[in-house]
Amino acid sequence: MLDDGLLIAPSLLACDFAHVGEQINAVIAGGAEVLHVDIMDGHFVPNLSMGPGFVRSIRAVTDCPLDVHIMVSDPLYYAERFAEAGADSITFHVEATDKPREIIDLLHARGLGAGISVKPATPADAITGIINAVDLVLVMTVEPGYGGQKFMEDQLPKICRIRSMLGDGRRLQVDGGINPATAGRCAKAGADVFVAGANIFGSDDISEAIAALRNAAVKEQGTRIPKSAIRNPQYEI
Ligand code: DX5
Ligand code: ZN
Image (cartoon, rainbow, N blue to C red; front, top):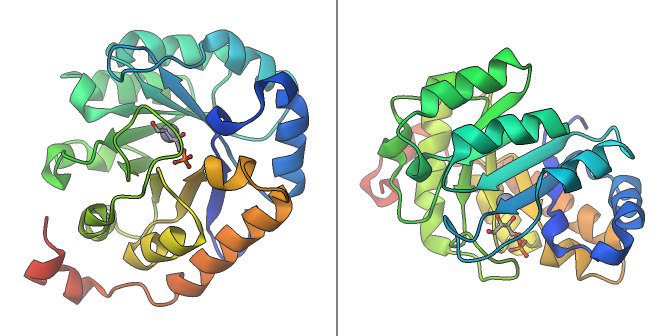
């Protein structure tokens, strides 16, 4: 991890699947610290993506941390499948389960990081009971299901609020419509892990795209909204 503590996590959903290995090498060479893998089951979200076999294959060719985001209706079952496949951390959706604690315990018992995610319409309060048990919170900044969507500005207050709930030691990830401009606004609100698909893999120069994201986030991180302001009603969700 670099000194600024920010992590850039390219979403492989947007990569060229005919050349996954080369695309992974390109983002790592460009300075990405984490690989984000989006799992969709066609039920929790209206789209299908990869399964455990994909994670197993890329695990074999890279030591880079694999951050697996499971957008599935049965996260307890799939958390175990993706842990077996070689994920380093798994983020599941609070909307998909009434057993979040069981999933977090399963992941921790296997030595994986555990993340909880909230969809745009889900308030920060939905994770109050479990936030202290997780290693990361993922605030979706688009409706999950597809890459290449427009960033939802109305998620910024929730990012502020969740940063204040998390304190400083743990990760706050943003995912969806992230580009240098939106990454800067998210960093200002308290995010420190930036998932980006279209912006990185759609670029002619992957290294340059990653550097631009990092520079924008670093610049705004210094202007993070102070805790006292977070209690201001305009930042409440
Ligand atoms: C959306 C996925 C995201 C998405 C991000 O359901 O969780 O990871 O692929 O893609 P971009 O950066 O293209 O919005
Ligand atoms: Zn994702």
